[in-house]
Length: 115
Length: 116
Image 1 (cartoon, rainbow over the protein chains, first blue to last red):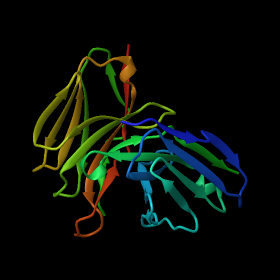
Image 2 (tube, rainbow over the protein chains, first blue to last red; image 1 turned 180 degrees about the vertical axis):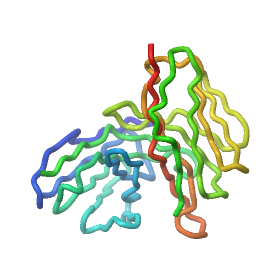
Image 3 (cartoon, rainbow over the protein chains, first blue to last red; image 1 turned 90 degrees about the vertical axis):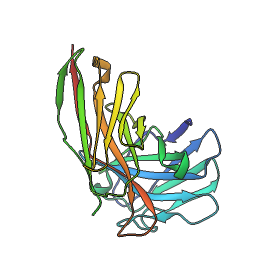
Image 4 (cartoon, each protein chain N blue to C red; image 1 turned 60 degrees about the horizontal axis):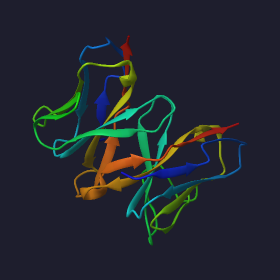
């Protein structure tokens, strides 16, 4: 597993502003993933972040709305831009371990509320 | 649309009983299956993985896989109040139609309550 520190743990933001979520891992990892978990819904993958390359976004998510940085093998950020109340959710970073990086270990999450 | 289906519950069992959690998935060629536990207000925690048909036991937990029926389950023996949580089923499924890229797809989870 890995120790994954995520901050902020929660925030309340105004419509139209942006929030950057940070994810720090205690060891070098190849694959990092950003998920969203809305109330009563399953975890939804936003994007996959590999160090040294552009993030790969899932259908329905775009870089202008959710820019991601991955400057090294232990750190990543997700920015939620031009927020609206529909962005209120829990955002989770995770790292992949094992063959195919399919065993996921999650950070503590960021509870975002947009007013 | 690749899907993972779970009964949302809540599933309520008395302490000491066996809790049975079920999951079906739509992609027949899926090879990797996982169970996560998520306590209220916390992030998901990986508790079991299974890759082959049959049973895999780890302590009080048993994962069962039947690829022909596209069905995976989690049994919790001697359930404890501390097992009360949402259990998420996750399946590594093909991303899009065909191709070789896989993506971990989660179900919505089943809320388990173990009553003392």
